[in-house]
Image (cartoon, rainbow, N blue to C red):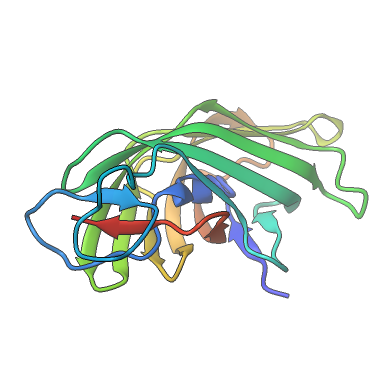
Length: 200
């Protein structure tokens, strides 16, 4: 079972994760998320207006630090903001459930006080890069005194094959107390709930 490792922002990783999938060639032309892939451009009425992602099957969200926090479920909802290269993506909801430091997964919470904005850039056929430009995530475990706030700006994810993947991308701790490292690393694997393609 593959773990989604998140050293601070756990799945913000994901969040974005919403706009990825099926990237086509890199160019200076506009980018648009599309429901179908029948050509290089998005047909009339085929533009994606909302996008949903979840942790890939068989994975969990893992916040690594002095104390590890596991999240069993993460749901990301996002909205493309229009044509562009890169295309801007706004996360409208980032929901973490089943988080904790033990087998019960119920003694911690992960919230998103500032929903992330991200840019999606096509880099090749079925390839792209999603970069967060903003966003914050707070992890709290009251019984352990953990209350950590992390900055999502600068996190990068590779896009392709209906998945969003983060590999040791850094996040910065903005302020907190007890067991809050100054910087962490995010690994994550998310998948779309419906087919979504990046077209021109």
